Length: 144
Image 1 (cartoon, rainbow, N blue to C red):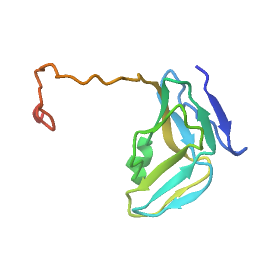
Image 2 (tube, helix red, strand yellow):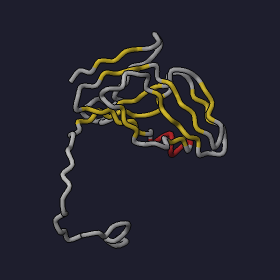
Image 3 (tube, one colour):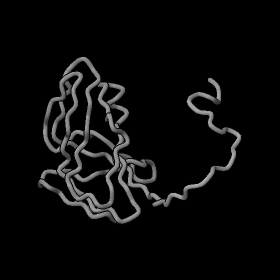
Image 4 (cartoon, rainbow, N blue to C red):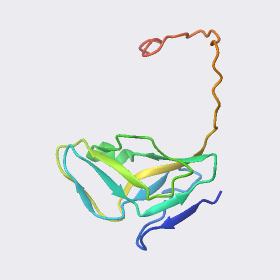
């Protein structure tokens, strides 16, 4: 599938699969400019990219595991959703959970993007069928 993408700056890097689409579900997104995220703070990191998704598709933005494990950098709204009607810049909300400032350089991989199909639904108000689980939730299936 081909999806339209626009570079908002000539230096923007297109999303890319690190190991190819046969091995990776997510494409890396890159920072468009340098910035520092102080410890305990949140920043919007620009990618200088905008996309045009076809109807019935969304782009899910997810944190990179290496940033979380090595630097305590995460996305507080993960997974974030880009709807098919959005045409603005993709910006990544990053939070520094660490104790030191985190430096981002232009071109750094800062998040992953997965394009996924979704189904639109219509609600039908009615009584619900019984199930084995019923209203059990929040650990009701046991610890193991």
